[in-house]
Length: 376
Image (cartoon, rainbow, N blue to C red):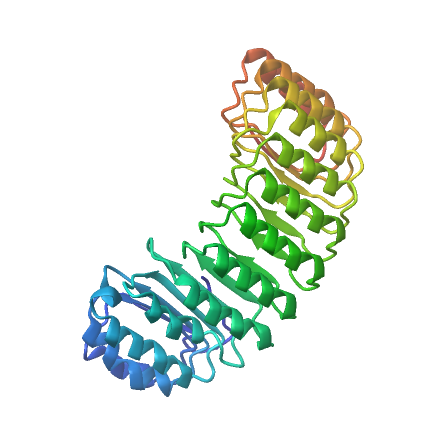
């Protein structure tokens, strides 16, 4: 997590190893960003008073090794003291290890200060548990400052996802929600979809590396038909098959806000799935980025997308990396490039394109005047 600063003195400090004597420097009032990493629990405890009286606005805590797991009672005390940092606006925990799920509660409750806008939590194969998720969800219901929430690799399961989804129905400030690499499946995706139907602030939803599946994709599609704020949806590695892609394509025909859709590395997009996406692109007026990397769409899929590119006037980025489109697919895309006037980025790397396909693409580039990034 990056922290931007306008402090004219020394806005950021990165501490690679925490020692018992290093905390004295923290009394300098010109810092407003601090990144901490280390495996000395005694050094961390020594920092408590200094941080509590500081003016830090951004704090990134990266724990290397099983620091808090082996010293969870001290780690929890340390985290509870964060409530005293009343000016803290951005807080993130990375690689946290805790053996007792109840110890997660003070961590998630540290996201509640009234001025905080960003909270991030990334664990190492640990579950924050239902209690941890419930505590965070309760805070979100009344929080009026949080705009970004990142919960990566936290093993959020059904009841936790349900509680989080309910909280999102009440929260009116959160715009970016990152749930990468959790246990979110069909049921959890359906719960999040229900929240999207009524929420009017969410703009970015990252669900990559989850188990969304066709049913989850269909539920999200229904939400996209009515949601008027979401601009970015990332479903990479979502376990979606042809039916799910077709459902998402139907939603694209009526959705007027989504600008970025990532569908990389699904189980099986299928010919019908690519055809449905292509038909949606012919009428969709807002999508600018479509990522279909590693979906084995083949030459037929490339040909279908090429037909859409001939009439589409909004798509600027198309990623077809690792898709075995071959020479015929490359030639079809070449024909589209001769008339398309909006596409600026095209990625065809590792797509089994031979000499004939390369030649056709080269010829198209002679007349195309908009493409500025082209990889093949």
